[in-house]
Length: 326
Ligand code: HPA
Ligand code: ZN
Image 1 (cartoon, rainbow, N blue to C red):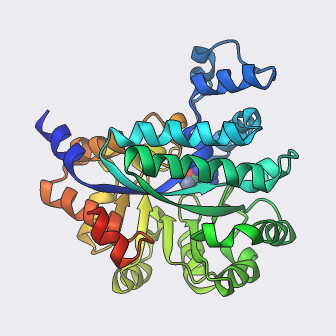
Image 2: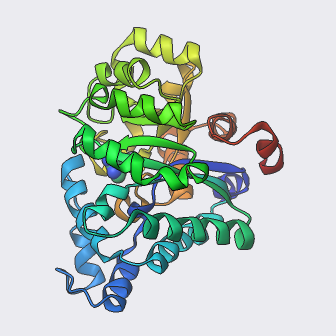
Image 3: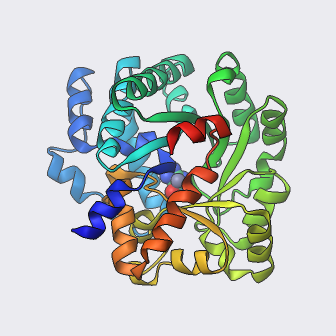
C-alpha cells in the first residue's frame, strides 16, 4: 500500500531492541541442534503458541528460557545478523541494541563470548547492509546492585565499544534508585544512561530514572502520562521516550492499539519514538510497529515524519554520524 511504501522509505532508527528478544523459534531450533541442547518444545508452532502473555513477567520467564540456546560467539553473531537482515528490509538505518550479559554469564557463558559475537554481527551488518549500530549493556533489575557492579567490571575491556548502560527486566518492586551508584559509576566511565521506566511501574519510577540515574532516554515511559508535572518536565527537557506499541499490546500495557498513547505523546510535545522491543516474541519488527500505529491510531504523514526525526535526534549518533545516516 501507499502507507507501507511511505513508512518503508522513511529513514528510521531503532532505539529499543533487546537482541535476545529477536531470537525466532526457527533459529532457536537450529542453535539447539548445533549445541546439542534438548528444548522443552516439539516444534516451532508449539513455541509460538507459548507466546501468549498477560504481563511482563509471563514474557520474561519464557524469554530467559529461550536464551539458553545461545552458547558460542557464532550463536550471538548469527542472532544479531538475522535481526539486522530483517530490519534492513524495513528501511532501518541505525540501531541501538540492548543485551543482557547477566542472562549469559549466570549460565557460565563468558562476557567476552557474548560481546565479541554481537560486535562481529554489528560490524558485518554495517559492511554488508549499511546499517550502523551501537551497543547498550543492560543490568537486570531483579538482581542486586553487587551483581550490576560485577557486570560493569566484566565490561571494563569493552567500554570503548559500548555506548551506554540500561536497566531492564521485572520493573515493579525494583525502582531505578536501587541502581543509583552503578549508574553513576557508568557515567564516570563515559557511558550514556537509559532505563526502562513506566512500562508497568508508576510515574515515580520515571522521576527516579531522571533524578537518581540521570538518564539520557526513558525506555517505554507510558505511565508518565498519569503525572502532568512529569509530562511537562519530559517535554521541556526534550527527553526521548522509546515506545514499543506491539510490545505494549502483547504485555497488556494497553488494551487496544486504537487506544495507544503515541499520538497523545506527540500532541503533548513529547519526543516519542516507535520501536519493537522483542520482535520475535511480540509479533512484529520495526516496520510492523510503525504500520500498526499508523493504521490503528491514525497517524498523519506529518506525525510519521516527526517520529522518524525523533528516532535520530534521540539516538546516540554524533552530529557527524547523523549527517551521514539521514
Ligand atoms: N521490559 C523489561 N525488560 C525487558 C523487556 C521489557 O519490555 N524486554 C526484554 N527485557
Ligand atoms: Zn524493553
